Image 1: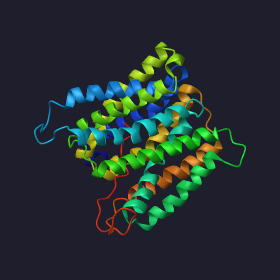
Image 2: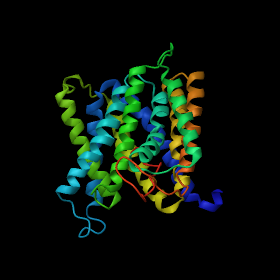
Image 3: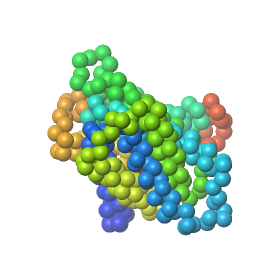
Image 4: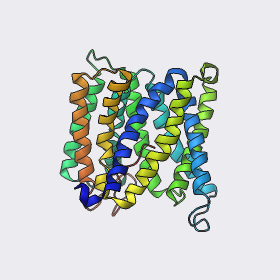
Length: 318
């Protein structure tokens, strides 16, 4: 199979696996000393500005202008993905281990497929419904709302809420008037999300709690340079060079990488609860990602009827 897709494809895929899996570790280090919203604001303001500086002079600028419609859409997009999703994740990782957080974030394809079915009427292969059931069982077992588990339940629920926000933002982006150039769209969304995160950080009084330690700054720098640039560049290249079904495997490999790195680098415990629930979530995502490639006529949804484009289960976590 490696020969079939080429060495460069596997190098890029391995990069996405490791880089996006490792961002949970970097975030856990960053929020030890920096308030969560401020840490994410710094990440997305810098990453967005640099992405725009790189991408704006390139491509079809005349056919892809940036006006009020694009900026407004970018603020909605940035609010859902970066303020709601990344902001929630950073806040929750103050108490939730990186490996557990990654498993919970791994539910994004489940929420995307579910929202696409309910809201847009995208019919699903029967195996996707098996994936839904298995995924929710895994999430419930991991959060353990009625047991005596060691996971911070409220923090876990906040992460799941953030995953739902990411799924909603990804589906919103399908029809939103965002710039057509992918790096421009990502940069503008990141910049707008960073502005919203900074405003939220100031309003909640985080600035006085910041400790600008070397570890925190290096962790944020890693999120910017490696997480946003290396990982996202490899991902965009893969979308053009490899089958979507292969690229989408990051969705169930990243949590495994994060759990291992959390154990190896942060000394996080790997419990039987994590293994069982994590396996259920990973298998669930695999079923849904596989089913997303099936061509099935669209049905009725809350917003639309008739034929719709298929939602991708491989939206990047930047």
